Length: 273
Image (cartoon, rainbow, N blue to C red; front, side, top):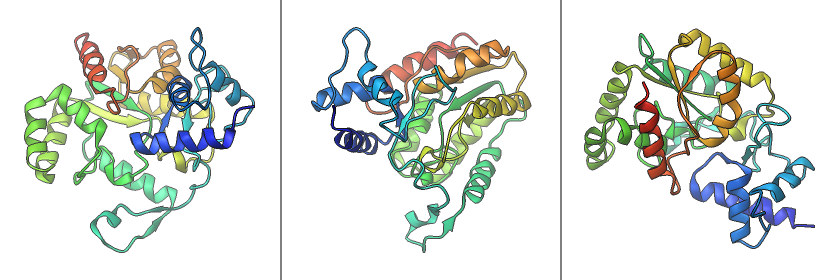
């Protein structure tokens, strides 16, 4: 029997070091193989880990689309951090204030709505706000590890992105980039309203909820791009069956070696619009 404690600990460390909120079985099993904790299958990558997931041995893992959908493996702190998080003000050295889930959702939605286009020309759907909430895509003062923002700006506005970085992620320049993103009709939403570790459970209901949100935002003809492989696996077939215009193949998250592939595949999707 594999050492489950060591496997969970190693997966947590991997997520922390790569600044990801979650990963899929293939990526996780490949990493565990490198660490000599769980040998992978050459013919069916990720199967040994999926076998453990099906047995319920990695309790934080879930299938967002229900049985048969791809597994998502978040940090083991999932389910343990349901109702409290430190206010993003802590990064400025101010006194930390506990926020409940509804307050966090309200703050995130307000930041997102500020940059909502009048007409959305391309809807982007990612997984969730980052575990470090101060790095949320639509927050204007973010100083590091904003992988998704930098990845999208590199694909869409590389010269502006370079200026932004060369000026130390200047807040005013980020506002200008977000305004340009908005003016060009791009809008980013997440499958989950909260960071993965703050959600106590997942079910197929979440898929129905995102479909309701999408229906309120766009028409069936509006292009949709799904960001990150597990989000593609969870949503692609369901959105296509519902008549939505998903235009991309699987796109990795733009971090930990996935930046180059993200640029290629994201631009390929945009070229079809």
